[in-house]
Image 1 (cartoon, helix red, strand yellow):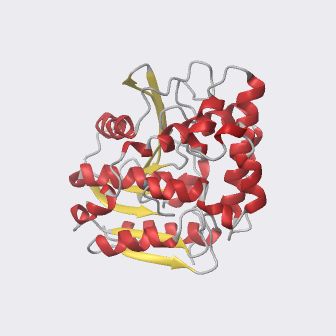
Image 2 (cartoon, rainbow, N blue to C red):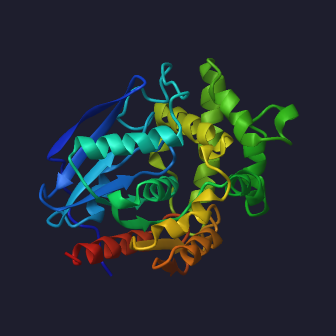
Length: 318
């Protein structure tokens, strides 16, 4: 099976002013004359990491990575007091993508989306299919309200003790209601003891779910208080609003991607994002390919290997 490509450093980077007081960090690595590709990170709010550069052959690709609004090295950061979330929505991110593509002089690019990034990739590809050459999604999400309800309520069946601690992190009167909205309110509290406690409990639940089926250790970035709060604030902000997406629209509009090659990679043991989501999308997307990984969860080395296999194969298309 393929392995990660060697580590590389960006040959160009910067901060793009996308309006609303937002500066987006972006970087480009690989071959300046190679096939353009863009990486859409997960979360939402997690930011890009150097390891994502290694998913592409640096001799074949011109790889664009960027931190979405409020995340990573973009400014302002959602973990800071001035991190305004009112101008951070899916529509804003889609507009940012177009601004970045135009800024870098790219006509069409391969779009790689991971977890939340796959939802954003689908929305981008369906809105602007002429700007997308190929799509790789691993793992697959569509961020439907039904998916969000499963993630923060339905999964209690598999993690009763962890979910009880998660639920008990909100005031008693809110424990039978919308936990995402309750956490969003706690994370907005100016008292550091309140918002950091909420961020810790939110990230503990994220760790419990992500580790299922993969044996992964906890996310080391959760040790950073600024990252914890920023990540949790952005996730709850998006999920309490259903990511501002009409329920089921990404699946209903999958036919718009006919003619756009797509590889969907998903672990059968992914409890946070059950395989049925990827299966439904593949069934509705003419010409897409679904790769199911036995014994894998939301994150795994096997998932990474399949991503590299897909990008290598698309590079060979010329």
